[in-house]
Amino acid sequence: MKFGKRLQQQIEETLPGWRDKFLSYKRLKKLVNLISSSPPPSHRHCVEAEADFVYLLNHEIDKFNAFFMEKEEDFIIKRKELQQRLQRVIDTWGPNGARPSETNCKEDMAEIRKDIVNFHGEMVLLVNYSNINYTGLAKILKKYDKRTGGLLRLLFIQKVLKQPFFTTEVVSKLIKECESTIAQVFPVDEKEIGRREPTIRVTGEGVFRNTVAALLTMQEIRSGSSTRSQFSLPPLDLSDSEFIRTLQMNSPPIPIPIL
Image (cartoon, rainbow, N blue to C red):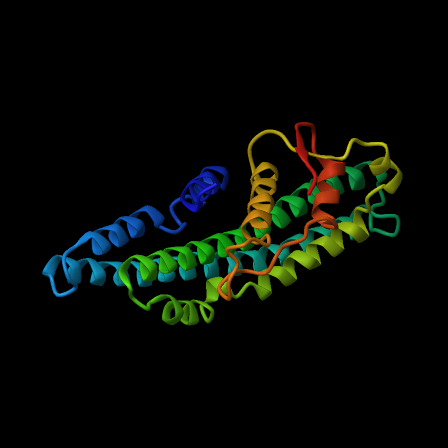
């Protein structure tokens, strides 16, 4: 699948509020086509198109950074809130709590489990957001250099590698913490997994379905291929993903092949 179609598919499959935050790939591609089909570089229209292309690239990077940093801050706060909710349930309804109640404890813990898994899924979507926008920038810059004879790609990629939206260490750490909480507080029944079909089962709207789509996209754009270069993201292996295992246990059915 061509990148433009893959990006459009990803935009359609992400959360509604995120859809205008992705790379304006079509606009950039049109500018590249305009520049490459124009008369010699000294021509006014070509110079203006090149200036518009560089301006739009910088504007897109600023857009990615603003959205990514806002979500990252929200996630840090959300993580603390979920931890506090979990501890309150344990302190109130747990066996050693102020008012022990197995029924209330199960109900509240089930709600928290759902919120933690959804939270985890949204963070996976943000990592995917970083990956696919970086990939789009690398591809459009490669197209620009190839079609125009310019040398923008190396300069811009060096800049991109230092941008907040590309630096996913904080979000990745939060994802691992969520997976640890899910494993410790809501352990997966290995026997139950063994009795199920080898599929991820996701249905309906919301984070579950969007996250599976994001995981599939991340694996595709980061898989090894003949087009890999120094600008490519490293391959992604989801075969042992704790989140995939959690989905197996917590999602109602539509089969999607396990990775």
